[in-house]
Image (cartoon, rainbow, N blue to C red; front, side, top):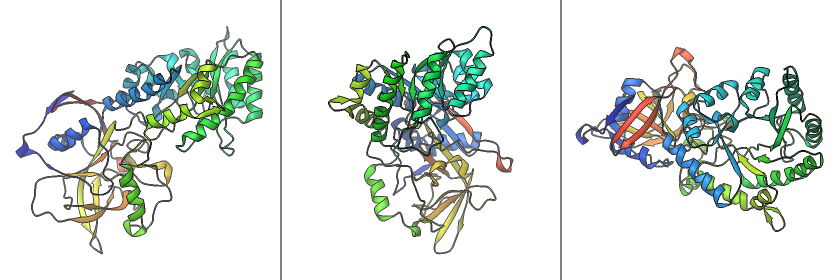
Length: 464
């Protein structure tokens, strides 16, 4: 670990703000970027490009905001951080220190969560392809296992019955809501009822704790409808002698990256083929400028109607059921920035340019939407005059023509030069490391945990 102080003003680099899709920035991170940009230059010089800086304080703030909503509604709750959103060990440690649970999807995430100090009983394993080794590790730890199918239930039963004496597993059954009939995840009504019957026959090896579902999209209304559907299965389980105590609603809480009015203006005026170098508007986007924060979304869900005169929150309280949720992206909102060093800027036809950076599109991507990361980067440059404006798209350092961080033509008030930095803000939620690789034998990007001790004093340590 090493500490870095702010650089004198005369040594500071210049920060150029984007003019269109300007990112929302956490105040502590904004202070570093705008008042001490030379620190970023120093860090990249030492650790290479691209470089990811992870900020656990943002995770803690996001956690507190969601917990405040749950406590306001006087609910019994569990929160499991969706570890798949980011590979940072320091964010897992932040989850453990915040006394919330962790949602894991592999034995590797399980081991990382335990290494971070997470309580094993507060770990929930989702995902449909758990191996026997993974099942056994979860049973040994006493963690919660979300059963995706009758086949997985039979597989886990075999793992348990192969032991002497039998071990016991804590399980949820995953439901496939009616608005997702083609999803390969979860069980429909017939399979779910059969699963309940099997659990009722094998209480010696299964401790049934409740139900789980996860939906795509970001609307709270679809989650409210799924809770209403699960309510019928709660009654059926109780009639079988089971005691469901939890409904896990999964994730999908929204994150706001840019101001809603700027986002709306972009779609009304600037989201045209001519604004993309490849002349192609992506078919879908994450809702970067949504109207709701994660906390507002959760409040609306809890206040939504379960049945006439009964809210979702009141249903959970009335039935003595714990509400569980698995935020991933929304808990790591503002928890990282990704810094790319410019290699060169190449002039193209029609007064356009391409900016090549040390790094690839795999380190700043929005992979699940056939899209690109729709937030403008900040430019950090050495002081220079005169400033020549340019319009450019940004490409990675590989030999692949499709290695493009953004096809969208971005307006720069000064043309980026070799050694300048492009800073992408708020990349912790899948963007920075979901697709990272060692193509061309480039090493994986370095990741540092960043903390601000006092104003203008920062510490950076390796994040493993």
